Image (cartoon, rainbow, N blue to C red; front, side):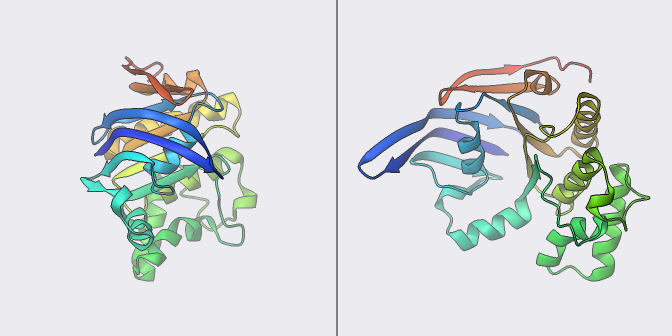
Amino acid sequence: MLAVKHLSHRFRNGDEETPVLHDIDFVVDKGEMVALLGSSGSGKSTLLNLMAGLMKPTQGSILISGESIERMSENQLAEFRRTHIGFIFQSYELIPHLTVRENVELPLVFQGMKAKARKDKAVALLTKVGLGEKTEMFPSQLSGGQQQRVSIARSLVTEPAIVFADEPTGNLDTKTEKEIIDLLIELNESLQITFVIVTHELEVARRTRRVIQLRDGFLVEDELWAGEEQ
């Protein structure tokens, strides 16, 4: 599903190069739910950007569904992201003047899906994440946890191969954080969607079945957990 092979990355500033990632190597299988754990400066955000095709690595390769994304052109990458990758953001990234349903439908607009089919799919997903009665509301009318549920539904609407969640509970209180992780676990199990959750919180990471930990740009731990509070 996702294979990161001997990945290294350096940022260049004039004649100076700053190494950020060092020979990162791991595989995520289809249907896994994995946490990418690291503190600020560990390299996890850079690794996320590389895996999502938003940057190209200095060395190494990244394969998603057997495709080497580092070899793709910008146009190819844009199309690949639209069809293979879902994103969940810490700040939700919802469009305020669109309804909840329209926000979820938006990726399907870019795919050229007809209006009725888009609406039916969006409503079905919103119902699955517990927002079936709020489809015609606007993001400003929802709580933070509800807005993140909209973001989760939007990430799944194109039936991606993999979903990257970037600090998905970072703006939420403890109770809502648990509810969102519970929802992601349920979706992972029921839909067999592959999730990579990027977080600096050990409590969040340990809810998943596997933790990949970065420190100072090195992979320091790749461990299976029994999963807490599943």
